[in-house]
Image (tube, rainbow, N blue to C red; front, side, top):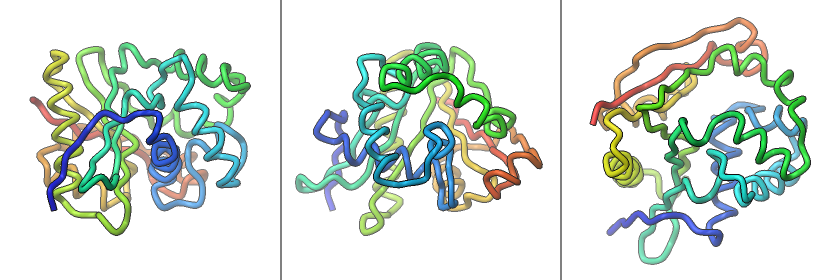
Length: 207
């Protein structure tokens, strides 16, 4: 299967919204966006995430940060790659305000904030990776992550990081196979109570 990776466009918005939802849940009952939007109704969440990815404010959820793997015109999967010095939490809050949500979500995601890793301004971040079940293979992941890392290099970055929940074995194995190493982890009983996972680990690759 010949795989190419391109920048996402507005035409990919449904898959991007699905990636935001599924990757944030990571196989769990609830994820970050269930708490941000205070609902676990999939249809409602996908509608909100669709709008969030299209705001004029370019948060890390904006479609312009995504890449799409394609074979014979069929989208196989997607990944987000962004610059945390530009796509800050403040920008995320501004994008949420644009679609009608205020900052009260901070209280609901307190457990997440306890375990979230901080990337410095010299780091490029990968997130929200999703490959359709029927196309899951190391080759698709390799192409998506490889294109993201090439973009990071072209922007002058020498470090790429991602975060994986402790216990989300599939994603951890994928990133390790492609050369990432665990650099730290944060655990919290509060996080475990809310998300049924011990916490979050950060993985990094030096370019």
